[in-house]
Length: 71
Image (cartoon, rainbow, N blue to C red):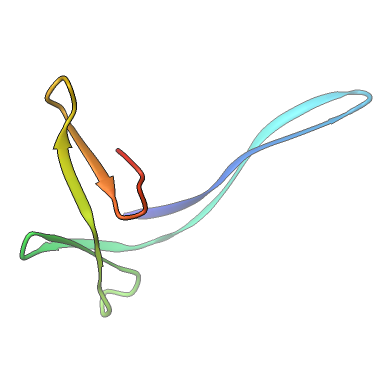
């Protein structure tokens, strides 16, 4: 997987405005073990990522991570 960082940039001056994007990131690995999601940057040390999966009002799964982000 790729862990992506970045965001939108915006600048303006008397002559106009410019919008753009900046990005960066690293490669990582993931696996499921004993029902838990594990991630690793080097393939040697693994960290558990807490997840909560529940259906939304339409029955589609919503994945919520330990930091509160929903996917």
